[in-house]
Image (cartoon, rainbow, N blue to C red; front, side, top):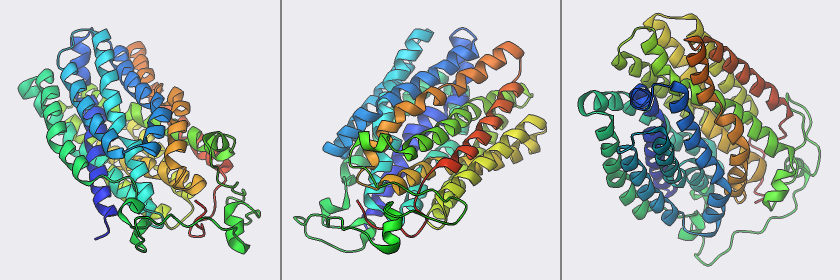
Length: 435
């Protein structure tokens, strides 16, 4: 078996823990935290923005560390910091302490989360990149399937403080041994090539790029691309962060991703409170989020596969359309079967976001520039990304329900679909290795 699939398995695990423990579980802890810390859903929702902002601001620094050092060591440090953050959360008794503990937790989650995991997968795969990213990021959704009801049960039986202690112990026991045993920066470090295509000696260097001609030149941006729904010519791939930031692709991808993160972060956080507000028991409300996560897992695999075979912009548009449909359905249903259906539609679309983000960056900038581009992009995604959760909490505190916020989020998804029309990328299945 190609060693890259072991890398995918570890990334599945790290995303399960970093995003699932720290994000999907947040909805289950939300009401207990709000009651403990003063009763404001806005105040607790703002904590998730602190978590997200801290992770995002680390992006450029983390990207530099991933390029220049050992990803294994970076991720090992993250495991220990994540454990410390959960232990700190178990001891808080004020909003200020809550924000500080979440900040520490965010640093650990970032060091084992989406950026290092996506960098590893992109380093190890080219032709099957979308599929590999889809499988790895399924860890996020599988965690949502498992952890929402588990977190609810932990809170009911042991209390939310003990629940965070359990998370700390599981983080060290599950993740640290796997990271230390398996993580390797790139296939060349083991004498391999991406996708396992051909072996090479440990001392051999990757082949130097050659000037493309004909159709390959069109893909590399040397000749204009024509035809199809998207007729924008992709620019040459940059060699520096500054070069990437001068390209339209950088800013359009950042806008599309930030709009989607803004809306889905809020929906995932407030869906359990919304369901309980409709009168459903916490266990039933958590099951709605589990349905979202189950279909999200399927969506990650589906959209990862789709991005390997069709224009990634079309895949991203379909993802956003499904999320829009799910949000609109949440607005109009109050029956439990209706909530489950809305969660299923929403989850299927939402599942595509993370693998498609990686696929868009990989298509636009190549694998050698991947970590620096994703890292540089993270701070620019933050303003919209962090706004969704506290905005929905503020709307609830002001109006007593979530409907106005959910309508806004439907519009946010529509705006992200329109932005894709301005994204220049090479067509699928025609890229050459210009890394």
